[in-house]
Image 1 (cartoon, rainbow, N blue to C red):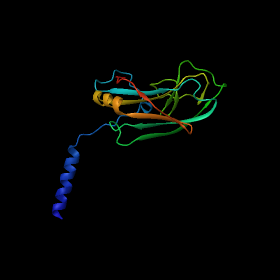
Image 2: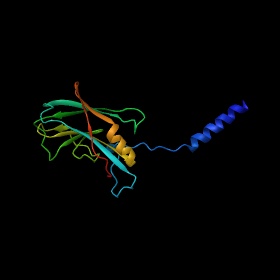
Image 3: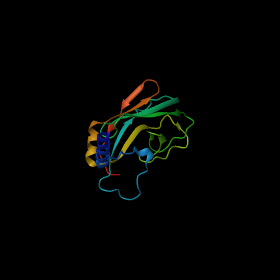
Image 4: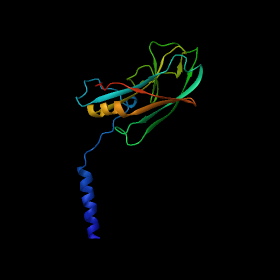
Length: 167
């Protein structure tokens, strides 16, 4: 019994000495800081621009899936979001972004649109930013991670990685 406690204490000591790994936060849950980020804070963006007319008028749904062992120990799947495409919606300046937690008019801001209704002529872009990475992790994520957007019942598309950047 005494030997068992020695193993438990050694295990606690080893666990306490292990380096902590920070898990980056996908951008929609964290607004970029107003000040200049520290030198070690890097990000990488992934996106897919839907071809014009790809989604017809009506109700649609989308979800985003992240397969990125460099950043996450397991695949990250974000729930389905429902939105409508309608002639009744006013057209906005610039694209509408399909983000992890809903539609947005800004690729880097977590502010959602007031209504999940998009005009048919509005460009649609699925976008995910991984933030809070080291430069090496951002470069590895850009080259090895796979992020997908799925829509309706049949569509699925790989998002293209951009260059790592400092937000």
